[in-house]
Image (cartoon, rainbow, N blue to C red):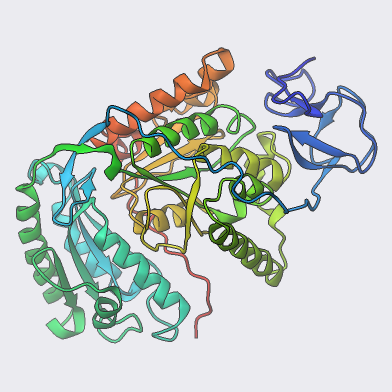
Length: 486
């Protein structure tokens, strides 16, 4: 049985259909005989080496394909070509903020400085759920977490949490914020305000449970503050805004072998279109670019950007070793069942969603985006944690590709989900927004990418995504925690 050949120099083809009694669609078969130690290519790139002798037509997977170290040397910036702006600027209907940025949604957030204030925050937000909100207010959400204490007030985890919370407070999809603390935590609200350069006002209020006299009084005081912010937010209207005000967070999860062939390349086309309109995009999940970083380094706009990316990869390699892991542990059981074998193969498919425009910058987790175009934000390869960092960095949209199926959603940035194959798109239709499988039937990647771009503009203008319709996104707030508790 023949399969789909992705590059003329590939050693494997991808099965388009299940093989009776054998591997399923999306898995690999050998195009030629391979000896032990021979490199194996897919997408025209090395994905591993043969660990046993392989005959033409054999199934190629974990039993005969092994991870290998690759030469990470590359020609920095050789593919970093200038982006030609498009003649007719794209627009969306969004909320113009006082600082000139554009929001795609209009949320009030109840944030917490520490887990100790989580229940109070949820109860403050509780009366504002459902259909009772004024038109134009997308929701009142309590975003809680498990950190904020148990370590030094100037420790790395507290500082990273403060950066994340400040990013959410500044996100253009947010019309008002109430920060709720206990009062004695390591992550103290006055310190957070000072370090973040934020100050209290009509759209940023703070509340200490200890200072107001306990749980009930804090809930009552907080609800009064939120009520005032809801009234202010209801007075805002959508207006035409340029697509240059969009920042798109790029995610993939539950990937399969088709993800790197359909959904991710098509999303990459949409990213290039957004960048040509002056917009921004964020690629993340550092462990999931391992083995494909050379493709990004070739697109780096400067040696400094390339060095910053390599430094993050070196950190992750050391971090994994410290915990007795290796980066090839990253492919999940679902990835393996879907036909992906090594992190090299997974990464090559994942990087495709970033398109082909230059890599302009590398930023830390949750740090503000500093330039238009494509940036890389350091994060773990865990979707909720990574998307949380992207939203903190300023993403007002998220695009999420999946091949095995995902029920992920995000708020306050709406999440558009893109299925890599038709079986998934039909089976989990209530969770998928776009079916990219038409590429397997002959439609061009460019045409599907254009469809994704237009859907992104519609989403930015207020058209709800499937995850929003299902009410997803509140529990997916997962700030990155690295350090120890004391």
